Amino acid sequence: MAVNQEKSITVKTPDEIEIMHQANRIVAGVLSLLQQKMRPGLSTMQMDKWSEEYCRSHGAEPAFKGYRGFPGSLCVSINEQVVHGIPSTRVKVREGDIVSVDFGTRYQGFYGDSAVTIPVGKISKENQTLLDVTREALEQGIKQVRVGNRINDISRAVQEHAEKFGFSIVRQFVGHGIGTNLHEGPEVPNYVQKHNASPRILEGMVVAIEPMVNAGTNNVKILKDGWTVITADRRPSAHFEHSVAATAEGPLVLSRREGEI
Image 1 (tube, one colour):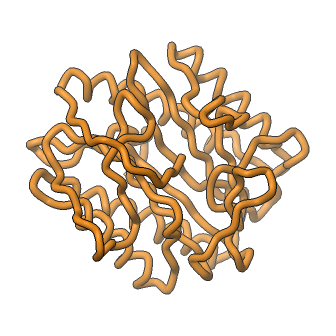
Image 2 (image 1 turned 30 degrees about the vertical axis):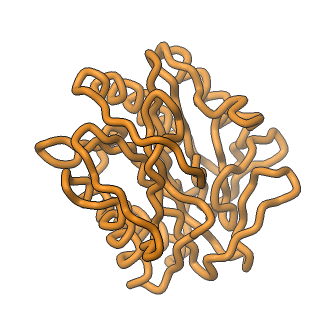
Image 3 (image 1 turned 60 degrees about the horizontal axis):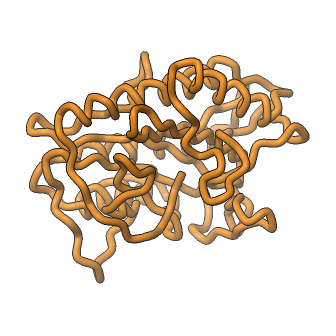
């Protein structure tokens, strides 16, 4: 889940990072389950139900349910929907769709957060490129989570990779710190903010990096439900996210899924 607000920056101890790793392993399990079960005709509410059941069966609580009034456990955003799509029994995915699923957990007082965009059956070449580039942009950003770097180093890596392929970066929503709160400082934009001081990355910081990359314009609109964000030109969007800890040895991806890069 993406936000855009200032919060205090916290650093975590190794023991706290291990708890966050466990929280994020549950998130990873949910997203892997959805990847396995994704098929044409599946309702977004069924995805939500599976996600909550998996989360609770592993001793955690769904982080998004009720957060600022969000009605679901899972954000499900299809095609031109960027983020924060609300699960529904009426909405069913179709062959060729791309489906962004974003899930968070609360476990032993700490949060996990991750997202992936999943193809439904065979998708267009343009959409496959969009997914590949967005995933790669996330990986480029993760490489910059090194003690002594700045948040802008993450932002620059994400932006340059996405724009190199002619795609655009959503600017109204950003990544964030994460810990005992779902959204902590610092903000982690997916583009370089030249007018703002960029915080240094400290050992023990944990950030949720989440590129939101559009095939067309970077402009977005929020639907009347007050949550669902769509691209202004209705062209497709992709969203990938990982929670990453800055350690003395380099970036530690807490939400890596089994079999992922």
